[in-house]
Amino acid sequence: MTEKPGMVKNSVVLVPFPFDEFDAVKVRPALCLTNEIGSFDHVIIAFISSKIPQEVLKSDLILSQKIQGFKKTGLMKDSVIRLHKLVTIPKSLIRRKLGVISPATNSQIKEKLLNMFEY
Image (cartoon, rainbow, N blue to C red; front, top):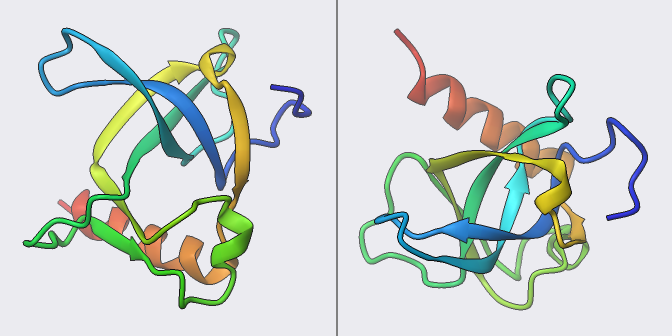
């Protein structure tokens, strides 16, 4: 990926994402929740799926094609950001950038993450 350092937060990217059993990976879209962390340039990402679950969890955020700024995400169809499916990866695993989320979507994500990690 040819991004400047510190420029990945809020980016929708393609990465090899592990399955729940960690026995295999598949290249999937993900949302970068952070810029690079530490000398190894790790980033925290959240899984994105085009399969909208029947039961939407409090940690899920639906990205509908109808919302303003959807086209800038680079996603092809309605999707869900699954904020409870987080992974820390080296930035070098990012295959390519698809797009970015809108400031409104970023605000919703911040609120959901704060609620998830509230003590």
